[in-house]
Image 1 (cartoon, protein in one colour):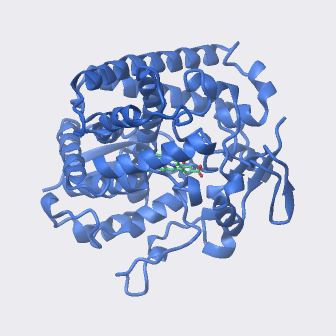
Image 2 (cartoon, rainbow, N blue to C red):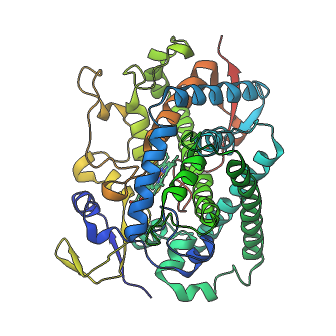
Length: 450
Ligand code: HEM
């Protein structure tokens, strides 16, 4: 059993997320497997100098090929229009929103990384999304079986820090008992997961081969080209970009792309929450009306008219990644007067920061106006709102995720009216227990807005 600390006080969370001593990620055998035989690859699950070098590179790459660029806004608008056209086929029928947004969100990331997009009807894309949903669904199923009683605080705590991998990381011995090896469910999940990996691997190998064949010195077209450029410019074998015959391009991008696929899920699931909250609280829809008169071309992603208060409140209520990603203490340290031994796993509970009654007053009420000043025109910043975490590990995709959420949410409300399908109504706003907290299944009926 590893030493595990769960930090629930928002002040301690924000202060300690800034500190170097908590920027590690725990060692865990399965990650070596995930990273094709080497633990420290990519960004998300990596630490030390490799993480610093890769994080810097990814930040620059995302800026050069995505964030804040007109081309990115154009690309997001294109994805939104494609999605609107696809959804028009479902008008009048009950539609589940689970999986509806994934393809469009994945496409925007895929475009930044590879310079290309899939048609939404492309079977490769559909297959990838199907497998991704399956894998995540199985993790959620496992958790709901393990933790049925969510009433007591202790179980709640475990619930939030106990998706399958969290459990395994804090209690490695469980790996040998966990149904991955023995149970029917586990075998099925394992098969889906392997199939997912193999499909992504084949797809990526093709993309990278094409980039090596067509790459032109000094003319990086996308993130993969920028990576190739960096490898070519690296002579020192102490750099994580150093590679023999460029073979690292594949392995590192492989880690990135698996991460990208999972990250598309975060934005898509937040969109589902936004739809569910706006249906459950019609007041929320009224607040969005102020910009529904705008045409799509006028939709400035940074504009004040796109009232972010509603989405901020959705982020707070759903706390999509309830306990952030596991951090590790890289040296003996201290949090709030408690000794934290080196190598402890530390969870910073985003859920608790978002539901601190002392700060928020009524944390369980959905009140977007708490993010607006008295005149309801200016946005108020609340320090404990940290859906993308905080400090040195803060989410690298925050800008893209926020832009995608505003644009897609506004664009869909502009084109359609949504009603909850009475047959499959879901008044339960509690998320499913997992690494990503998703709403329980619900369906909507779409009508075209005149
Ligand atoms: C609503 C959508 C999203 C939410 C709520 C979210 C939230 C988070 C959180 C809580 C972390 C953990 C930070 C920590 O360790 O303390 C994280 C890390 C990360 N996110 Fe996101 N994320 C979202 C979308 C995305 C997207 C679309 C991308 C892709 C560009 C992305 C890229 C990353 C990366 C690379 C990290 C690892 C950072 C590091 O370890 O240095 N995220 N995100």
